[in-house]
Image (cartoon, rainbow, N blue to C red; front, top):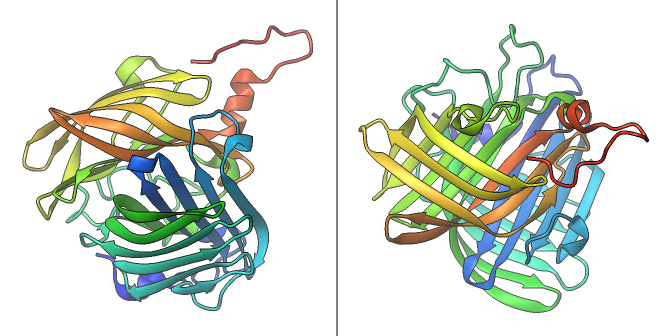
Length: 335
């Protein structure tokens, strides 16, 4: 169970430069095909943080097509992580920790964010067996630096409703949508970020999903994927997802071009979900990791929805398989 004080720094006295504390907050406007991402990564032992704000309005394999991008990797860390202000114009304040937040951003080129995030559920603690059926049974998604050593790491996911406004290049759009944010803390070596799919699908306030799926692209078909943690928010109740998973994805280059998955919750209820890309672009949360960050169009039976999908690639992993000398053949598409 996540407590309000866990929104603030959790670093122990012996934490070193690898200890990070993060926010990942998506803000989506599906009917306008607009998706904004706010990402914060603080290293409290060093007193520094990075901030990233990106706004996407098309489907592209190139960050130059983004509507807005602001990235600063060398900023002073705030005294309190629950009341964060940044020199780039970003502020995140926990108004009712750990569920509700206020996000404001005054950027350049006429881009602003002003939204209230209201959690629709208790934060889903991936290390609490009352929340996740596989808590303590699977390797941590953020990969302990030494897999044999356990750390005081934490991570929660939280489906919530964002209300407010998003202004992009002087055009203001109303925001009233449901998505999933997360907050995490612990030691993290950016060179060993795991390949994984982080998946959200929303069909309304009465039905929303979130899944964390380790991914081995060296395998074929459904053998590529596992499900370690996830939940369905069904009519106000949260049910953890089991390890049962049928999942396949298709790619064009690094872009996810299609996704289908069947998941099972702790009641034994099965859900078959399908997704196609709507908008998206590459995102680099760390220089050594690439995420194709997209908002997908989802279907479940006769219901239509949306949701952010993050296929994470470890850059050293890609280098080992795709790195070429001058006279090596150059593939046009990598699947």
